[in-house]
Structures are given as structure tokens and as C-alpha cells.
Image (cartoon, rainbow, N blue to C red):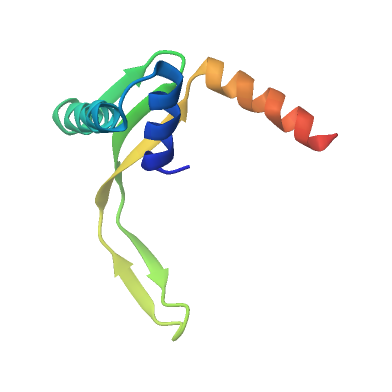
Length: 98
């Protein structure tokens, strides 16, 4: 699903203009990113937690040449789903197995 599809779905369900909805969705995403940058963590109840973590430096291999490559330490954003999301995904997974 793309941001455009999210905007369309919200706009249609709430009977809002696509332009206004796009602004709201973008503002929400901007606020999430700003909070992660400033605080290093954002918890959205029933959805999950986005958190900045430092990934250690490591050695890797170039798959074409097999040459060893040093990968420097870096910061990455991780996501841990909330309880409600995990429960809903588990239900979805059970339906898919049938």
C-alpha cells in the first residue's frame, strides 16, 4: 500500500477532500519522524514502537567478488508491533493457512 492509497482510503471513509487528507497524512508522518529524531522513540498505543538503535560495526563480504568489506556503525530505526497489531496479524496468518 502506498501513501496515495492511504490518503484515498481515509478521504473516502471520512468524506474529506483528497488534498486536505494528503496534508493531514503528511503532517502525521512528519510528526512521527520529528519525534523519532528528537526523542529516539515514539510509542503509538495499539500500533507499535519506533525506536532508534545503534547497529555495531561489522565485517561483510561483497557477494560479487567475495572481498571482505568493513561496514561502519550506524543508527537505524526499528519497529516493534504492539499487542493489538500482533493479535490481528496472528488471526490473519491463521486464516491464510487454511
